[in-house]
Image 1 (tube, rainbow, N blue to C red):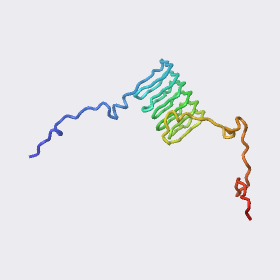
Image 2 (spheres, rainbow, N blue to C red):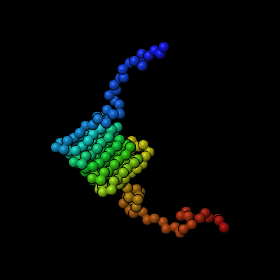
Image 3 (spheres, one colour):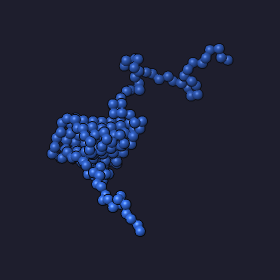
Length: 173
């Protein structure tokens, strides 16, 4: 009476790119490994050793483990720091500095989390405008300097409350 179609009798197919398998696809730099240079790739990365240079895994996650020591700019989707980082972090989605984490550098991501006890020195830019990596490089400028004055400090105008800084038009009352 009820007949199974070919689709119902076919065995399930295995897809290696399923979300469960993606969790397992992670490269590890062990605690005794030292890497000097640029790292690029298409999988998640766990750093327990030392890295100096640049880590560019823009579409993947990077975790700096508790034994990890990194002197590099890091570009990733999600960056989690449990060890030490000296360099700028650029997270497409978020950056997490764990309780044991120490970061000396600037953070750029739409979401940033600093756990109690973490150590951070730098600036945080939580702009979620979707800038490209080249545009994300922090520009540190002083609000007191004018590009026209080449080093001279601008002095702000003192304006009484309720009045405009622009001169009143002539021919008024």
